[in-house]
Image (cartoon, rainbow, N blue to C red):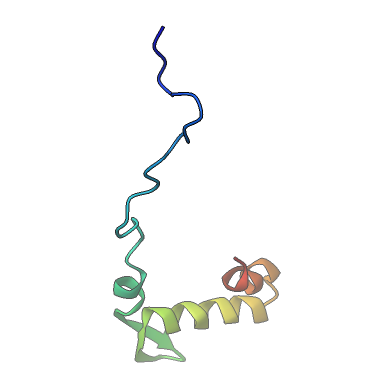
Length: 73
């Protein structure tokens, strides 16, 4: 009787193939310039700066979950 795996052999002898893993293009998204309106005037910021500014404001307003979320991994 034949079996899929031979006795004494690892289940994945070649391992994971080398190469780029599928990751979201964070640099492309967070590097984009966005317009932020503060106190009636507009400023150009990178998306990452705008995100941190937004989360910081939410945290200062008392949203503890928003304040902790970017630092959690």
